[in-house]
Amino acid sequence: MQATNEGALSSTRIPVLFSPTVDFLAFGGSALLALAMLPLGAALGVLHADSPRWTWLAAILLIDVAHVYATGFRVYFDWSELRRRPWLYGLTPALAFLIGAAIYSESVAVFWSLLAYLAVFHFIRQQYGWVALYRAREGDHDRGGWWIDASAIYLATVYPLVYWHTNLPRQFNWFAEGDFLTLPPIFETVLEPVYWTALAAYAMRSGYRGLRRGEWNPGKDLVVVTTAICWYVGIISLNSDYAFTVTNVIIHGVPYMVLIYWYRWHRPTVSSHPESLTVSDEVASVSRWKTTAGRLSLFLGAIWFLAYAEELMWDCGLWHQQEWLFGWAALRSEQPGGTVAEGFASTNVWLAPLLAVPQITHYVLDGFIWRRSARREADRSLST
Image (cartoon, rainbow, N blue to C red; front, side, top):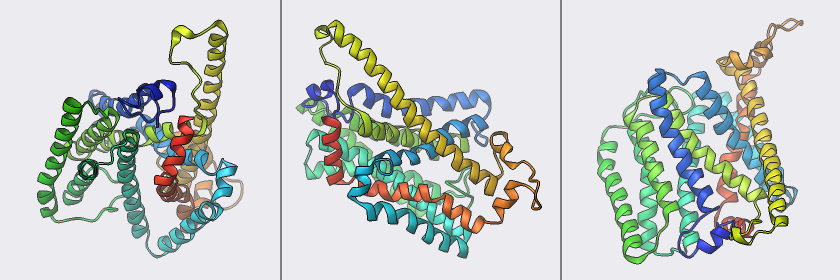
C-alpha cells in the first residue's frame, strides 16, 4: 500500500505499505524498541518480575488497549462507513455483550479462557495479514510461495504458543491465570522441527528471489523476522511477565495504529524531488506538518482517553491493582455502600462482559474490514 510519491516510484522494486521510512519505523522500529526494553528491564531489575507500573502504563494502556479503540476511526467515527454496513457494525457489539454476559454468568473461567483464545487468534491473523498485504503489493501470486510465506508467519506465532501450552505454568498469562489449557509435551516436540524448517524455507526463498531475481520484499521479511524473534524471545527464551508484555504488545499495537491513522488521514502531498520545491511549496509543507501534528494529536488523544476510561472502570470494578493511577475514583461515597469500587463490584456479572465489548468488537471486525475486498479498497485510499 504505498501512499506517497516515493512509494509509487519504488513500488516496482521495493513493495511498501505506507512509505519505506514509515514501514521500517512501524515494523522494525517497534521490534527494536521491544527488544531494547529487555536489557533495560535487566538493568532495572524487573526483567524477571511482574511488569512495573511504567511498563503497564506505556505498553498496556497506551498501546494495547488504545489500539483497540483505533478501530473506531476505521468504523464508528466514519459515518459513510457506518452506513455501508450498519448491521455488521451494530450487531457485533450487541452480540458481543449478550454472548459474553451469558458465558460469564455461567463460568468466569470459561469467559476469560474463550476471550484469551479469541485474542490469540486475532494476534496470529494480524501478523499473517501484514504478510498478505506485502505479497499483494508485490504482485506475488505464486502458490508455492504463498505456502512458504504462510507457513513461516503462522509457525512464528503458533509454535511459541504451543510451547507455552506444553510448559504451563509460566510466569505470565494472556489475561488471567489458568486461561490456557495444558497440552502434552509431544505437541511441542513434533512441532519444533516443522517450525525451524518453515523459517529456513522462507529464508531460502527470500534470499533466492532477492539475490538471483532482484525481487526484494524487505517489508515482508521484516514482519516475519521480527515476529519470529519477538515471539520466541518473549514466550520461550524468557519466562517473564515483563518480557512477554513488551515483546508481544508493542509489535502488535504500534503497526495497527499506524495503519488506521494512515488509512484515515494520509494523502500524498510532498513532491519526491526536493530540488523542485518552491518557496510556496516550503510554506505549504510547514502547514502540512501542522495539520499532521493536529490530526495525530486528535487520534492519539482520543484513543488514549478512551483507553484510560476503560481501564479506570476495569480497575475500580474488578482488578483493584492500579490504585496509583485510578485511586481518585475510589473515594468514599457519602451514601451507604462504601466506595465506588464496591458499587462496581456488585455489578460484575454485567460489568466484565460490558467492558470486554470494545475488545471483542475489535477482534471480530478486524476480520471483516481488512479482508481481500476491503484491502483493495484500503489500497486505493492509501495510494490516492
